[in-house]
Image 1 (cartoon, helix red, strand yellow):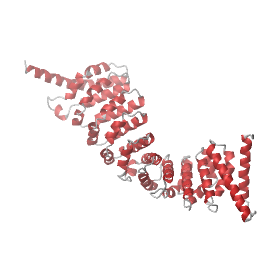
Image 2 (image 1 turned 180 degrees about the vertical axis):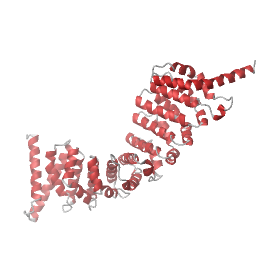
Image 3 (image 1 turned 180 degrees about the horizontal axis):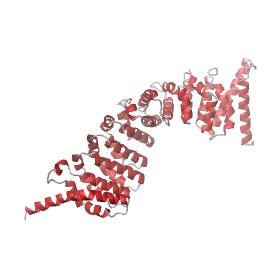
Length: 456
């Protein structure tokens, strides 16, 4: 049995001989000889295809002759079968390491792939799109090279309602790779890319949807206001719908897109809310996947950065309770994000909205027993926010009834204990809120004392 190294060396030599023969223009063949060589070379091409599909990242020096042969056979002067096999093999090579992708680029394959986007063979066009998409995903330099060649404009023409599902997958993958990385896409390319993605997210295919949502997330994560003006409102209901998609990677990609949109202006936040996103987020806060829960917390934080009505909608959707559960989950990353979301809801709510948080008073006070300084901080800041008197209460003997609930939950005693906490920041915060809270508590005690006197 021949050694594997010997077999590989024989293959390499056959590829080199084929390249030399095809580039020696002084040699002519009869029609019969040409047919024989065509069959021989097609067999060689298929051998190379087999090699790059079964071996994991074969050494560059071994694939170099095969790449050169494939680039030759990309030429439209050869039959579509040659173009297809060659582009298929090169697309595979370009998806390997940076060195392999660079070999394909250095072999001058990119201009030929661009020409093949108008090939009469649809299958060849599909492989050209796949190859260009893989090259775009290789590195920043490869992506910039393709942009300089106007590859993205020409790729966009391939993804439309007439395209096969396979083509749509390749186009979505290519758009994902073009949208990924730094620097962001030139702004003049954003509207046509967005237009294509807004079509692709409605295609009922997991690969197309996940690539498209991922591309949207990266594309939108730039000049938010400038880019979001280009979004068709028809995109919002689809993204919110995809938050509950059964496939995890689709959910995560949709969540990231929604998060970035929610970081925009109040109009776009309201679009998201109106499509029922808050109900979906409530469900996702109890998801098994950590990334899902993190993203849900971040979206809630972004929505609460909006106006008072939007913050109130978060309260009305009863998102605070599951956020408290995550805050005390013991998972540091999730706890931190949930804590920030809780504080944003409480601190940004109007007076009457905060009154609706009475069911959370006990939970806030329970946080004051935590050994975790971050959780203690959330508890202290939350109590400080809900215990502030309204303007009417400041100007009268009326009291903030939430202070009564804080007292009944042991909050005053717990805050007094925290004034002596070993963590300086916690101790300082406890001292800051103790005096105004105690002042409000005096109003409560006086009210009930006077009320008691009425019945004596």
